Image (tube, rainbow, N blue to C red; front, side):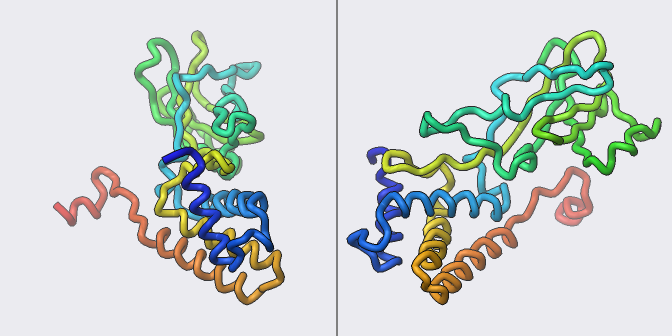
Length: 240
């Protein structure tokens, strides 16, 4: 299958749904534009478990920048996100800071043994000043704030590092670039794009119907997702 064949299939299906097989109402460029809007919208609404194709991790532990004085360490989100096809664009994090899934902290060399950091919110910053809840190299905390990951730990002699696990925005579709997300979600993308284009055409009843179909499917998929049971949880005990 040549590059762009999947995208052409999606635009062809969209043309049929819009009763526009000859591209008289909406040109291909407009359909591609709204398919891209639709996949972003879908990725923002569906559970991340269905978006494994968008998951990434720093290629190797990345250096943290110490503050002055070194009460915490920072890492810029802008330096973390790689370029993706098409080569002229750079994909950002999905949902901004919420695209950061997990942070693993390495206090010093060798960069092989790390500790999973616990995420905190701005409202919880005061709590970590409590000596019983404070942070350390063994119990690091991290906060996503102002396009940075702020890591609270106690490394002092060697600049620490982190691995960051994240979700990227989906690859932009073009005539020669196919979608990267799971094929099982393609029909929802087409339905969302259909709804937006019906709205552009003033067909509000059809827009509402298509939106309902898409949102119902997203809701069903989100309701079906069952997170893995934690080790030692009551659910595991009852199953054993």
